[in-house]
Amino acid sequence: MTDSRALAALSHPLRRRVMDVLKVHGPATVGVLAQRTGAPVGNISHHLKVLAAADLVSEAPELAKDRREHWWRLVSPNLRWTTGDFDDDPVRQAVANAAVSLNLDRQVSLVRAFYAVREERPAWNGAAFSADKWLHLTPAELGEVEKEILAVFDRWAHRDLPEDGLPREPAFLFVYGVPAQP
Image (cartoon, rainbow, N blue to C red; front, side, top):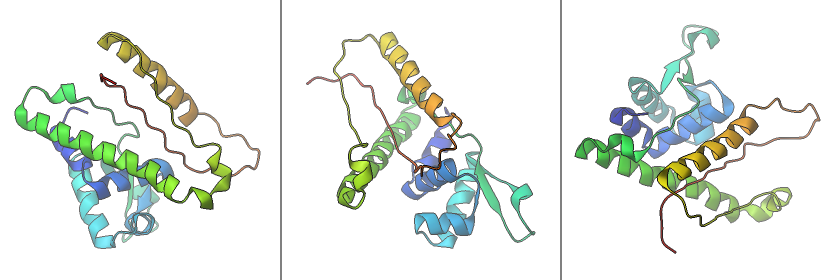
């Protein structure tokens, strides 16, 4: 993604949640999105219009049972961007920096939400994990690490689900690779 308007549209907490719901559960109506996010239908409608104007979601009229029902879907299930793509303009760079901050807040809040109620989900206590490593890398090598990690994510995201009758829940994974000092 290199359009700062789309990045700005994505950088609202409720719009990010709507995008996540569509990514995890597929196309949905405004009512379903409101139910899954806990937001009022009117708010969801407004935010869907903003996301549609940024070409992040689109209507899915073929799913509607009648003309009153409106379904929405993601334009693309994969959104990737780097702050360097926005360095050509201070305004675009400010949008990208704000998006990084909001994105990180969202990601960390999902992890914190699990740990706040983990006693209620004992089956998941041994499965949840965190990991970090300090590596000595060039920017190009960090790019290679990124490609390898994304390949693992893609392999798991696009695999055929086994027909073993086991319940599967959405699991959130995220990774950052940034230069830093201990």
